[in-house]
Image (cartoon, rainbow, N blue to C red; front, side, top):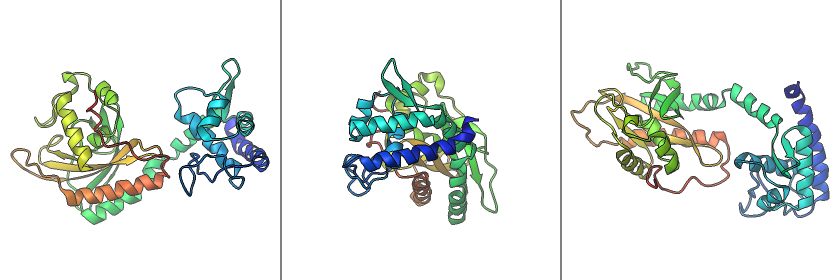
Length: 314
């Protein structure tokens, strides 16, 4: 029953929040994350013309970005809000179920209503819906098969596939999982992960399975490959998964600059040994599609991670 009541709760919370905003002076022009729309460097609470709804959303985004609950003072400090306004917003969010108050700890975390919204978002398959027309357009431009993939542990999982009118038979169908270190889509994402996470996914030599005798066989080799591909801007796979096929892939980022998916173009290519080809023309189209999907997901709250490969700092 709570899920059905959530829209009404949101409406009541937004109405009360507007009242709070009307009493609060000096709130800055800010987006969802609290980053100003004009200068991107001011405090959330600096100008009275900013709707309180945006400040409430900024609070939710802050709570979602932290590993544990936060005190009201920490929320106020992080977002540049007056403490009185922060307490009002947290009280309204708590009443609506979007925040939870832990009185013994004097801290606040996300509430069950936030979980319900997130679950509803996932039920709508938003990533696939946003990506499908972009993949179709990419296939029309390059005339090759295109995929949308995500990381699932140490594997690449394919969510979508779009094919040209005369498709080639390839392994990576929807729902197929393949070793991430061998696939272009997997490495396009691994290259932007923290070093410790990459190391945790590939803790030993046994983590590096082979399919065709090509590809990285240990963590140092993977690190070098990720570093090169991150500098280049796209990942390349030449017969690592299926002999006679190659792929290029570009990463897609979420609001926080974290890699969440990759767009891949796969095509026939035969060479006795790895020829070192990187297919920049195909890669530029894949990158264009990946950037478009990143923009469709929404405005980023910070720049993408600095240019260091995921496996280099282990």
